[in-house]
Image (tube, rainbow, N blue to C red):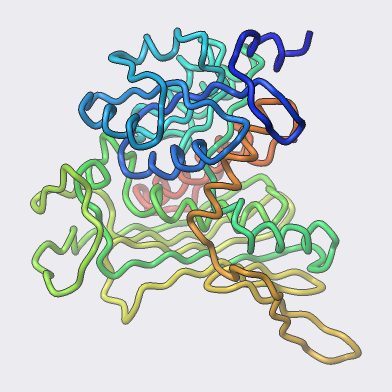
Length: 373
């Protein structure tokens, strides 16, 4: 008897991709704003039964359960993790709880999808690597932008060798007025500011398309003179539920140069608050045979017949589409748990990204280049 049949024995069946199958029981932990993307994608997936939710805010849990057709609202985390109907969980909580909850879920025999960042520190990430190994369960890191249509197309080009060896990448995620406040602005809960929140997306994408080489040195700076700029009221921005205009102890801006063991390099700039003329999102990689921009729109630069060409792929979404990205990410996680897919964003990738983030913060703190162990 395979794991899919054994763990789902007695479950309600419905038509899925392979005929009448038992669905994967899923629980969602933390039902704040990002959880809506998970819940909506699970609810639309024919191979999923949304079996439970848990949040410290029970009223919010009940509302989300009703909206997305979740079977049970669990009053405690332990109760959800002990539920035999739940095979896998999404963790959508504050960063400071990612490692603890993910470890508990793995130890309870659940597969785990954990929102990025994997943890607050590389040490917490390594503990999760160990937890995955001892439990023989999957942990997928929520690098959702890997699953955008533009990223999937670019990955196919990279895998086909169209860019050759990628030797440099440029990652930029700049917000002029983008500090969400609340827990995002509280280092104890978040682990940091724009670097660990939005910079991690573009850092990960560049590193992914470079072939995930091992980082060896980091030189970085951070700045924090602007805070959350609560005085600016003429430009709208996202604010979390516990927004406090007086509180922000995270960086406003971070910049880094990372060198890798294969000789490749990566430059990164990211900000919550910066006196820039516009917000800017850029993911670009450069290889010996060609280069590519993933954001703000997928484009390829190459040569043919001794002529430089700029190529614009014809796809529906040349930039990241949130609904599509999360649907693809959740579909892959479900297939992974059911033994029908290979890992794309494994715990080892999350841990290596955390090594880089730790190195950036350490270099900025000490004012010197850091050699990563």
